[in-house]
Length: 202
Image (tube, rainbow, N blue to C red; front, side, top):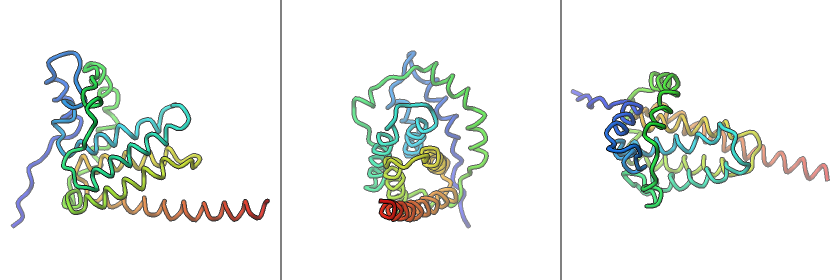
């Protein structure tokens, strides 16, 4: 007989609880992530995906890509919680501002959370976190490369990856793994074709 795992709160609810528990008007990144435990990996990944969808300085994909690679390496070596440098952990954020942000994106988070559900949860734990870490590194490398018109694609993959980790959705995780490998193969084929075209042209 299989024993059902205890139901976990959704990400938005956990974040709201952490924000309401904060004693002052500002909360450190460390205190914000603490209630998420291992799911903090997914939340950080979501934060790194956001700049891909807003007007930002050219080259931001390279910066975000490096950070995604670093996060993937932490998962690859088996860290239970993401390691964040002290100066970033101590960085404070406006509690009211974050609550307003959660209110603004609530329709989107509700829709995404309805799509995701805890299934094939073993795939979200070790030893399969090694696969997730390796795939995260691949996405980070692709994001860092100067490939035109791909920020939305890789940003969307990061969001899907983030929700798969946060909501313990192993089925969505497998879809992200497969899509990443397909994009790596397609990118390699496109690069070879582009190099061949350039040689013929010049």
